[in-house]
Length: 588
Image (cartoon, rainbow, N blue to C red; front, side, top):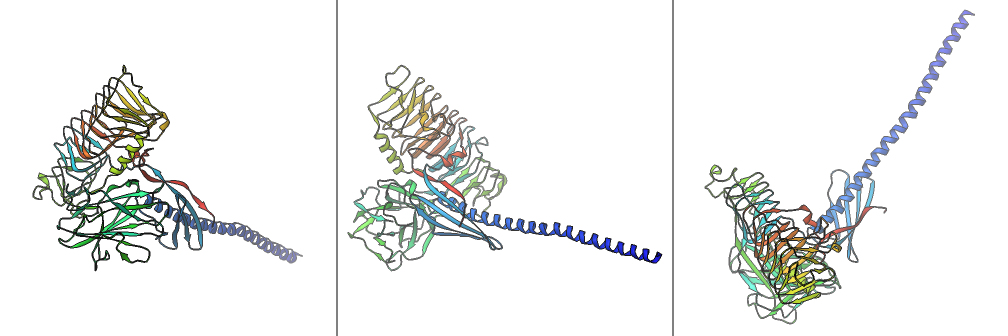
């Protein structure tokens, strides 16, 4: 009996252990299997997220290219590491561009789609952009932002400060080296980018110097209610009488935003500049991004005005031919130039020019010459980094054709003939809230007078604002921005200023082709543009951004650039930045 009981107890222990093991295995299985499944799910989810991010990256790339003035190809592919890949198909849908993207990580695939439309606006990416006339800063003046100058940047002491980066680019000569057209009226033109018509136009010319080409100007207009695709411009060597020789320099882009609906000159700047051979034939080649029946370009032509070149066109058959009537030439100009300098300025960011001397630079200093025999102790605070070529001339974001168009808009509203003086006791109604306004003469505002604009203002003479007077936008503008065009001089003094609609994002742009702009003692929420004139800042003068052929700053004046101006939208301005209509994940 004793042996039996011991045996029985042993069996019970064994059975208990086996049962415990079975239960443990069941518990472990219940925990491990779901955990393994969960780990797999997490991995799959991670792969899916990587696929979607890849797809989204192509959307972002397309959006970036559009806002850089580039024409999107029919398909876009971006490289990624490992098993990740992404591609997109691009299609025009009405007046929008639709980008459908596919992102994959191995066998995991995600899809996204974005729709972009072109808004109205002009981009000002620099606090100050100066033309060939350059920038002069004296007596403790400050620019809070970046400066890009096509001429010299010259200061007079250490208290002259540019807080951002400063670029002094190569300067183009005032007179064109090769030209057909400054005094020529177009006889008509040739359509470019119209359905079933010309896809490319090329004009030959004879180069007359080896000085680098810094600017190319062409005369054209756009046709249609919405913008066509941007144009590409190339310089090609001649090959047996055709523009099929080697390309000289890089591709250049003509943004549709700066082309008007009537003929006007558009400037294009090679980056870097292009060196051509003297007494050799080259071609200006214009290429349309696509062909549309409703929106395209027309290139202005003359007859018999240029003896050293011809015009040719190419259709989809890839054959170059002479258009009818024969003897036409495109209106064009070729400008050459030289390098410029930064001298006597404190720069908070990067400084870049051929010569930088007597300057203190916090960021990188790119130059070929320090102006003092290579000894930084007697010139700049650091030696030149010669690894980058001198910067190239940069075009303005507003063209003469834009200004002509704004004049026409203002001329459709209320018209006042003769000089107009406004003050608190004057009899003229100080508001045009629902109208555009054209003043045929000089406009003077003084003694606390206020002019409220409901549309663009065009002054054929001078514009003077003094003694706390204001030109402002009607509240209906909201976050939009307005236009004031002046033929003569614009002068603000004693707290005369420009204001927006009351919304902090609202501004006025004062634009002129040839007039000077003088801002003394304030200025307000204003963007200033003078394409061929001089902007003068004196005595605590302020503005949001300035584009001028030449700029002078004196006596503690300050320019405060606001980053939001890169997306400024002028309600009557040139078409500009692309905006997002929709963006998100979609099913296949």
